Image 1 (tube, each protein chain N blue to C red):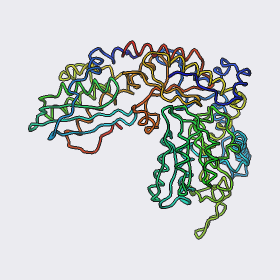
Image 2: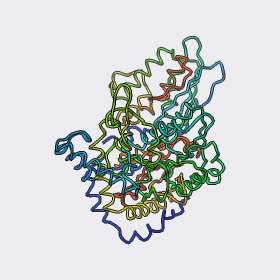
Image 3: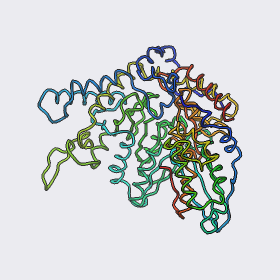
Image 4: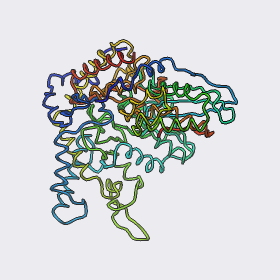
Length: 423
Length: 149
């Protein structure tokens, strides 16, 4: 039940020696000085959204105070500066994901919009009657519903790779479900409800052997694991800025240039065209073809600052720190009588989901809240995962770079109080 | 600071552990389904009406302590009431848990007063009202599951 989780990667073990100062990191996040119900905030809902460091808040604020102008269309100084900052953030994302070219980075509202973009553009072009889209049983609703909409429109079928009792993808079933009718595979890198890490390289290898492209939902993964899209060789990779210490409302679609080139636009409007007449419109080059309308420029600037911040700490060091938190929490919380951990995959990161015997997660959440502890309670936008484990909901503690072992002790003490009141 | 014991009163915890009228009623009872998509709580309410009067009432479902206790105490307080009286109770109950009436304005609530503390916890109002929303759907013969959203 509470077996120590394995390190995600060997190299992270080495990084433990080069740890950053968590106290210093905490001082970078102004919200961590807040009090909730008179108690110091213990924020363990990072899988829902992470908090923002001062450098991100300042970048957004400074953009509006000193640099605000529209991009890609002005000859005046501020517009040029805004354009440069916007494109510099694109280059930062490119390097962060190790994409081959910066034009492979498309800015969108978030991981959800990125998946909808691929489903509506690539999907509508490539998926037809009788075809299949293959997802997994641990997907967030945002990697289920866009494909359902597509399949319904096209008369295609959504197939689902099951998971085992530990919350790991059934690779034998994946192999079996890949068929000549499969037109795309869409799978989470890291499960938001269970914390399971999927073996993306292996999945991509199996799909590519049949010429099937793979979309990876990296919304949960990017703050916790180093990502190299060339090494993974995935065709699309999506994530949201707000889960990696950036602003809400901004996200990224990475797509291989060859695929993006062939895809039709997702939305029409300004900036996505190179010329418009009433007879014919010539679309702009990628990535601009997919960026209709004035984008969230401040959001992109903030995301750029967040990535710089994460790079400064180093993702390997972050992963090592969070691994220590998860291993400690798994032991500490898992040892409490009546606790059952949901999601015990060998490869795990960032997320501890659990249920308390006879006590509904919602009641747990309310009592913890009064102790200043923020956790998520519910189905985590992954109802099929809850159905798989035969539970309506879980309590989820999810970790970030600024969390401490003391905060996990506070969680354990809070759970003791829950049991005292409701047990 | 909101007080936990205000919401998790003994009577509520007791009903949550041993809910009353936790059973399905046979046809021709009316039945309605309620669902809270935010937390996944489900509630089914069964009603046997004689004319305008609630002759028997039962419920089943899964949910938190507040939603189970609320459903249990609702069924206890509604037996023998008319549909109109039930609607009146719901209105008064709803105003209480959203903090929009005062103790003196709701003499008819009786034991249901125990839920007054919910008004300090806005995130939990839907837990307390799920069974009541479902009851309303049953009274109106709605066959589509109601949700708290």
